[in-house]
Image 1 (tube, rainbow, N blue to C red):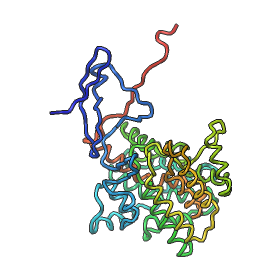
Image 2: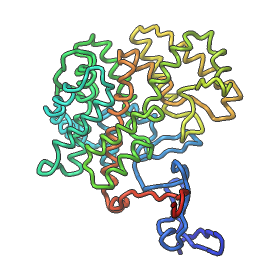
Image 3: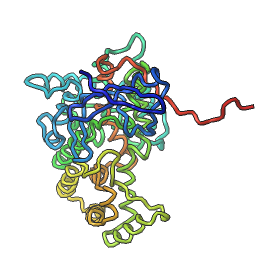
Image 4: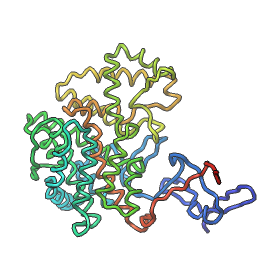
Length: 417
């Protein structure tokens, strides 16, 4: 017998099916509500709306849990095979076994040289353009290339996107910094090749430390359920756009400071605080609403507990700075700020715990990444999640055939004269 929820509204009494998630979450199926009763649900920001079914990423915000395909994020950051094994997991649904990882890495490596048309677009844009603007244009260039007769099947599109994005982001960095572009080296691993295209020849010790840190950062940013940019990718894909057009739309959403620009904002905040002794003064300003001062890198739309990625990145941050011999005063400021906020009842009551952005910016800065490139690094990692979510959306059993078309509650004039 199908479980039902009863909605009473005025004289209407409507029976709605109840669905169950793997974690026990209940969802009332309102698909036919408007058609049957002319009643809408009102949920600005989709705070209580599941727009799709997905088997990719699970988040429990109350308990601070993040899992890809059932695997805990802390375990995945130490997985054999690094980022490519996680990309395989997100796309195919299982961890690669035997030759599967080697074959997948070989396929990705064959596609790692950036398409000429994309490089032409990058070079044509001003060197002072924001890297995210160039990335959006680069994805659009791929959409133009793989169109019509050149269209790829969905899985092939996803693999090409994952393969191309490291070279694209590295080329954007080289272009905006006025340095010559560096060709890919297919013999290198995914992250190692990216570091090579970004920085060229580095001392082996420094290169190893940076690669290890980026591997973990990329894994932690690979997917995060139905956030704003992923929802945009799915919505764009539901209209039939090819993956690369969807990625351009997703990158545009990620560029928004409320979404992908948080780690950049954290670094700027820490620089403004300047030294640990000024943390107390800063904390008091944050609590004064009229001051307009915001605490960046704390709190999360989903997590009401400690962001599980933040615990991992905090340790990586300390390990990376120690290994690089980088005596960054921002780490001391960040440590003091975290301690002060976690001990202050004002922030504890509001469930404002550090999130992944709080320490990731310090790691990227120590690796020599300019602040304006931070969001592009985020997009590089998230391209895998976007591609996996888009690929899953195309599957009919996940309602991939329906175009996303939200309704509205009209509050304007009727019959204006």
